Length: 184
Image 1 (spheres, rainbow, N blue to C red):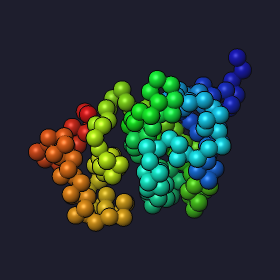
Image 2 (image 1 turned 180 degrees about the horizontal axis):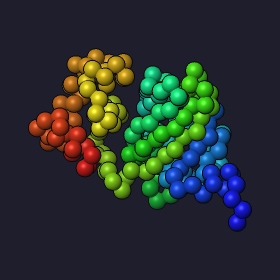
Image 3 (image 1 turned 30 degrees about the vertical axis):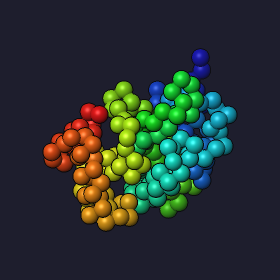
Image 4 (image 1 turned 90 degrees about the vertical axis):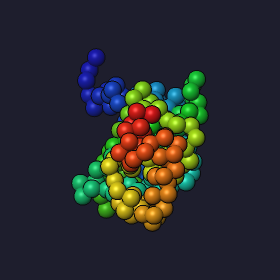
């Protein structure tokens, strides 16, 4: 087998996507396996099909723009949705990292990596989209003030969501909540 860039892309051990204006131009076999999709279901389509809700898609896009590094790099953990196969519709934790080719225009063109975290982290089914988003940022170690700034909400609102999460996960402290989120 001849090794070239297309072969390396196609056979990479992590899900890869080439994008333009938040549309998936091409993806590899691993990404198709993660989402239980066929190439025709993703090529030329918006990333939105991989999100639980339209609102989560929009908020994540805004978060990427606000948090992109000077070199155009971005990474986070978020909840995504499987498209097909026996797990169709299942929500799962996914690590997403990548690079916008032009940091001044984050969504214009990029390459993104996806890693399924479901073997390491289970998703508590009764979390709201906002709770999932705040949980992901708590796992990153952000304070209420930084989460609020990133999401465009007040730190007090973040604290309300944190308290809800603490009740749902039966955690006595924020530190314990993060450990339970990681173990969930």
